[in-house]
Image 1 (tube, protein in one colour):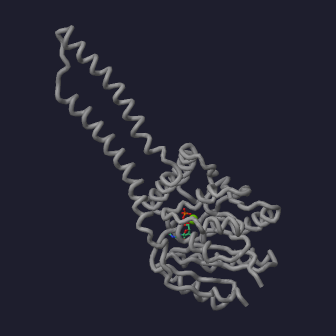
Image 2 (cartoon, rainbow, N blue to C red; image 1 turned 60 degrees about the vertical axis):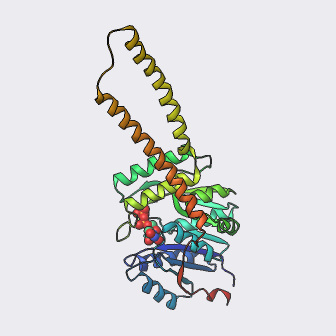
Image 3 (cartoon, helix red, strand yellow; image 1 turned 45 degrees about the vertical axis):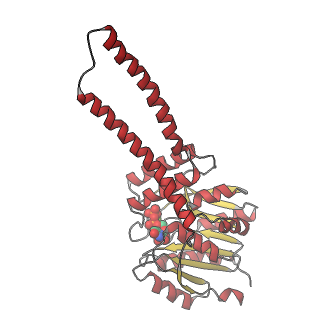
Length: 314
Ligand code: UDP
Ligand code: MG
């Protein structure tokens, strides 16, 4: 029997939520009355996550385990799950139940009506810090203003995609993956379902500030080169202003008996612009680093163990 739905769940140190997550997902997927698979991608967890998923595999033929050799990151885990999936529709969902599995049924409805991508857009977010909500809000809007790709705001990776969209995404080879942007880039018929983001069922966020920053910079650099143009704009502005400043200094020197004096002003102007130049170099560095990642052409991830994937052929 061919698989109709694949559910991809990236998991990183989620021992506290895995059972409940499985239970809720299973309950929802059973309601479809069609064949499905639950692919848990273990992103190098250090706790009992892997053993727990492995036990689920033994118990339930719908469960698959894909285990990385180390932590490669959320976006890579999603990518691996999509590559390993075989369903006609692929759903990506976090393990922590912040995205209610019940919404999948709505997504399936829209898919059956002919949509190729159904993404979940958050109307509200519970249990997240004001800081996270604010930075997320600013980030999505900043990204929108920087890029020409229509990336919907307030949308995470919770979505359903059709097999053909999944195939296109699997064929993209870029290393610094910003999956939610890539889905938009691919196109096809896309629509949204609105939902309320719940609190994490248990445990803590696996996205500390450092990962969030890397994720944000990935999003911007892979979908826009406007930051690179900033150097040009600032350069022109500074040259323009300096020219008038020079005229003013010359005027004071030649036609009045006042001269501009003081090393403090020289030093502060020079420090400011050294700072600006270093920031610009840093921005260029972000892009060069990513070009370097692409040229090395290493695989996106390394798999240590695969379990449960042979059931589907029965
Ligand atoms: N995750 C992962 N690898 C990581 C970080 C997170 O696979 O390096 C998974 C995590 O287990 C969860 C999902 O990605 O299923 C989203 O993470 P989390 O809920 O911690 O992020 P938040 O909702 O706080 O942004
Ligand atoms: Mg979460």
